[in-house]
Length: 309
Image (cartoon, rainbow, N blue to C red; front, side, top):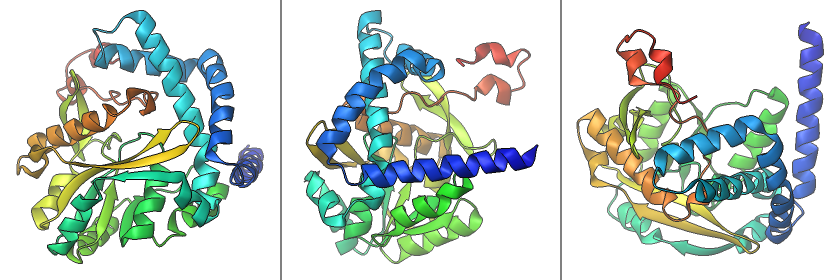
């Protein structure tokens, strides 16, 4: 049974890589038009993505009307579709073309000032807009290190790795060796990237509020802050539909520097909320951010009934 699965995955990986290479030659305006066509189809036929998106939006925006939430869900899935279509552009497009597509950069002084003071910079990069464009810009302008976990389709690993490393980024594994590499980079006054909104494994996080509900949040950040003098900023590449991208760097919520892990995690989630506020439709709401519940950690009987999904 394993051979057909492996063969299928290989063919699937090659097809996806070919699609990315084809789309890499397209301009962001064309990719956005494609997303505007495909996004409504994703919303209509991808039951899982639509269901999770609408569930999350109902949880974080309880005062919005059903009509407004459904409109936002459609826009969000269109932006998520655009992100997928733009991956080839970010990873394989001619660097000059990608750089020209970045029309605005806001808050760069937060990084420049920190490095001028001899401090490293921890960039919290939530799943907003096109985070691969953010990686491109950061690795083009700063010594930059980020954690990397190989994709499930092994055929895509060299494609993604080469795309993320091509402008000089250093990718490190998601294990203690990778954490050690992040610490070394910060002590060299370099920049490192962290995903602040990816649910960690049990034992690697704490529950902290994300909007109106507790979310299991990674505690890597306070560990890095405690051992370095790094500055923390939030970074996103906001899509300018039909035109290109705007890079935003936002000063972090001061709670991220707290010694207490729960307090720090609360600050991390507040940073993600501040980024989402730039344009809520550009956040990846189809991710099951609230999959883990505190009742499960506490051993509450029938804890599954407290889950959203």
